[in-house]
Amino acid sequence: MNEPISYRFEYTSPISVAFIGAGGHSYRNVYPSLQYAPVDLRAVCDLDADRAAAYARTFGASRHYTDHRQMLARERPAAVFIVTGYRQDGRVQATELAMDCLRAGAHVWMEKPTAASSAEIRELMTVSEQSSRFVMTGLKKIFAPAMEKVHAIIHSERFGGATSINLRYPQQLPEPGLRHDLNAMRGFLDHIYHPAAILNYLMGPIERFGFEWEPVSGGSIASLRFSSGAVGTLHLAAGAAATSPLERVEVIGSGENVVLENGVKLTYYRRSDLGEYGRTGSFLADDSAAPLHWEPEFSLGQLYNKNLFYLGYVPEILHFCDCVLRQQPPSKGTLRDSLAIMRLFEAYQRAPSGTTVTLPRDDENDRREAVDNDQR
Ligand SMILES: NC(=O)c1ccc[n+]([C@@H]2O[C@H](COP(=O)([O-])OP(=O)(O)OC[C@H]3O[C@@H](n4cnc5c(N)ncnc54)[C@H](O)[C@@H]3O)[C@@H](O)[C@H]2O)c1
Image (cartoon, rainbow, N blue to C red):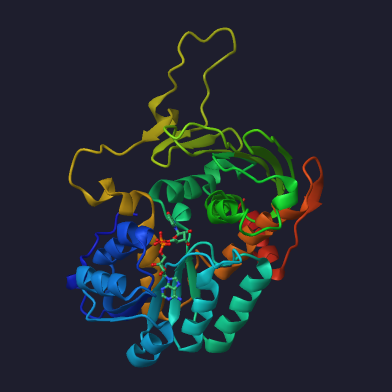
């Protein structure tokens, strides 16, 4: 977790990369993260030539394009970063761009959402397999250092296995008649990737799902049963104030629990014995069993105080680059992860509130479940 970070110019054998998309999020968060990655940014492509040229100048690429196919043919990059938007029909522009990159022989890092349906994820899986190139989606939440710590804690022997989870994330769900309209569902598709990635990362696949929906705010509360046997709730807290922290995650084990507030305040309540009920005068557990708390100091000019690090952007890009250099597929942000997320998205689309549905499963999920159970 605390491996020293290298600066881009210090890497001796960088990966030749190209970038599709010169928009707002990529300017703020993705291009700047490349400062710490082993990449040689050869070219930038955007439909808007002026933006492509400006981004190439700003982030150190020597060429720019408006046609990604031309860029792929001329530059032959080993990997491509894609950060684009939505098509008129509400589908995700990056899905087909990613297929073009795979077919051109490049590995792909793409922003979420990977696609707008599980069928499209399966198509990407097929093209990825045929081209022997992989796709990784930028699921920043599961690369955030504090979330990785939650994962480590709940998979430790002393935690006793995750038995339940409660996750809060503000997101509005449109009314039932609009849930198959991808334009009406754009915000939901865009954001469900965040909490769904966390649920899948920490708890594994969801087996059973049902939810209640509130029409004034569009908020909802889902009840979840995971393949592992654990249970959970996903509170999509639409209607919360813009000034409020977005997220709260709590995972309960057996005699222990861990809480992550606002993505950076982590408290681990460890197993402890406070003595006989009614006879204990102090709430202070022994130091060896007292709660552990971490939060950033936000004062020093340290990398860990930059959002590029604590939100998970640099870690996810480093994982991708490491996989390209080792010629190994990613272990996080995989197409399997995206498939699990899309299954939850589609469950919200198809299940009327107040009902319960079973989510599809596949062999890979079964294997992961077996591994999780083995670790208990
Ligand atoms: N992980 C996060 O924290 C986070 C935060 C914000 C946005 N995002 C994601 O980032 C994406 C939006 O990024 P943005 O704000 O930079 O988008 P944007 O809409 O500002 O820019 C997208 C750019 O892509 C270009 N583009 C579209 N199709 C293209 C093509 N075929 N060839 C070349 N260029 C093309 C457009 O011209 C535009 O300049 C979305 O997928 C969103 O979900 C993620």
